[in-house]
Image (cartoon, rainbow, N blue to C red; front, side):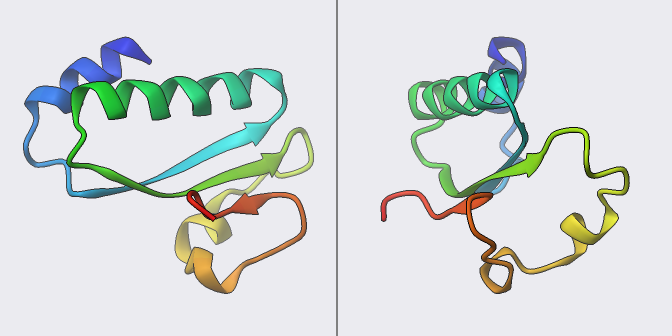
Length: 84
């Protein structure tokens, strides 16, 4: 996560909002927390708009997740808006 955060720190083409998208198991949660921490330290101007956890091992095609508006997809347990 630190290597990616270093690149994002110097790459101003990265927009002001990011959406975290990880699998719902221990490593996915670890990456999510690390990303939040690294972005806060290196790019405080970037807002994390949502943090979504996808059921591990059950989803084989991620295309529908990439195409949908996350505000319209509020399923129990796998999506949370930060700061609420």
